[in-house]
Length: 340
Image (cartoon, rainbow, N blue to C red; front, side):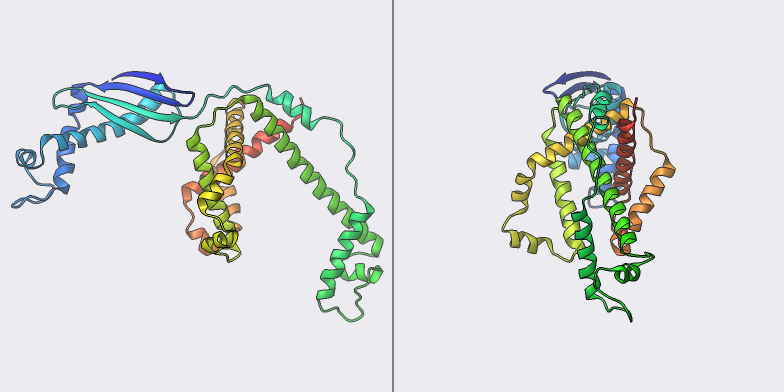
């Protein structure tokens, strides 16, 4: 098989080639059987039509086209491997030569993942993670706000005998294993600080990823942006369904169409694609792997948070891919957070 690869743009390629006549000829009989199985001819059973009768009724061209389709279906994975490309979506295939006893000529156009040249991502990460920052503190006003929230929540409940909704020692004792109000305040301060630390960590992750992705100068294929927009639509539909809101009612309420939302999300979708491609490239550079046990555990964790009826409708492969992405990305961030 002779192949020629041409770069049409940063992510668009065209592969021209020919499959030798003997190799192409091996698909003829299988193509005859497939065409015979879907053809109706009086006096013959489908799938049992003699070759000469089939050709006289449907023509040789239909059988050749079937053979070409089967051949290219087998060839595409081999072409991907030989040319070391990472295609996205379904390729566009054009037959350039099709005749019995001759080579099969073809041209394949495909979009591929962009080539990414990573910057010194560990230095970028270090500049974010290990810079000097003010100590995370909890203000008294934040503790007071938390106490007021608990007081309002408590006031809605039936108070036990001797209970009180006033913010005092009794109030603290009735909320849990607290000796007094000061103990409750200390617990709230600890929880607020822990939440701030988590949010600060998430903020640093996004800042680091944004800086690394920005330094990569990634040429994002439009098809990936479209995929991401559709994914965002799916996520919103799922969230709305979870709170009992129909998609059509939501669109009527906001007075927008699905296409309007996709247009509004264009920049966000492109950013998400850049982030995903960057994380993927770092994972490759760091030889990050995900074991079957890790996948299984993460999948079970995801399913445990989904209602049983919804879990039944989930695509197993998509669920597995989602779990893989979560684990891989977490491992990448752990690498970026390490101090050299």
